[in-house]
Length: 419
Ligand SMILES: O=C(O)C(=O)C[C@]1(C(=O)O)C=C[C@@H](O)C=C1
Image (cartoon, rainbow, N blue to C red):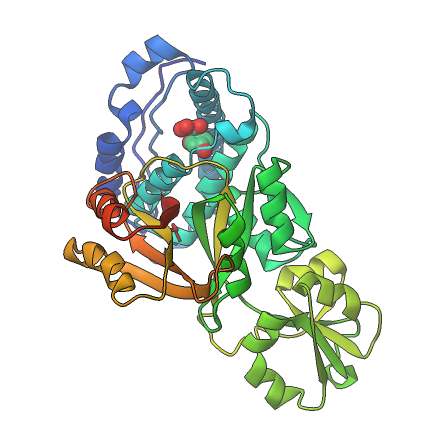
């Protein structure tokens, strides 16, 4: 690949040139400012994206189709060359990390979060942050998979929202391992069969999924990330006719998210909770008088028809998933830490945990108490706070809590979810 490149001027049609983007890239991408030197030192070579002038036309005039497509073809060529070049650099990063045993050792969630935050920061439209983040995640996913794809356990079968969360966080180049239960996800990650797992922990309408939290009481696994997924529920059936439906299958949480819709539109239908939404679709596929509530993609995976949707009662219905793994990762610059604190039933015990956090202005996003399975009347508190356990002020607060208040376990410090 050559280091020289002709630089033309691009302005987006209908938009001024994105100055902020250029500045941010130069400031934040260490390779951007010293591409010549970097090129000499490290082939392959980092090239600067070419710029193009949009066709000159009166604002109301219809653009010439062939001319605009020719521009797009040129841009596509450049994007493709840059993606290939990026993949070569990512391969070099892999080499720089030394000879590591497996793909899991190359994965750097804190670096991925930083890359994606820069994408959001640079974005001046017209595409949304979500769309751009999705594209860049896929690029990083493909770059990482050059070593070997990551194996990610999730609550299967295929077509569940957990699978969507896997794709959202790890991209489509990761290999998903559909498993029968959340507990199995924990087991397969602990045994090393899966590199990471993605497990649901909270829904905006239904609250915490206690059974997932409880698994941390006995598991040594760490939390390495979080994924927020907008959940849209669809009613799927074999015939696609609402009047045929006498039974509705779904996961208990999905039935709860569509309670009002079901009451209004299918008051007579029997509701049956099953292990996953995908399992619901499998069952509904067996007869014409059954339907399932699941994500729209389950209709494609299982060849079902969409009867209605989205049918969730709250339009902002969002599920939060945790990424679980065997290792902890360094700070990303915007992190959250999950703590598990065991407390005896003693006056002031919880206060002694929370006071050092409050005194340092550390924000607390959640506190949840669960009976600790180890002892009667002993409770485990799950607490999410802002910051990384290896960085002050959280580091100092944890040291103080450790000295005076006892049993605190850091379940993990991880990047705050990028949209
Ligand atoms: O920067 C790294 O450590 C890389 O391995 C490169 C890269 C990327 O494509 O940007 C790929 C995978 C990692 O998870 C993080 C980032």
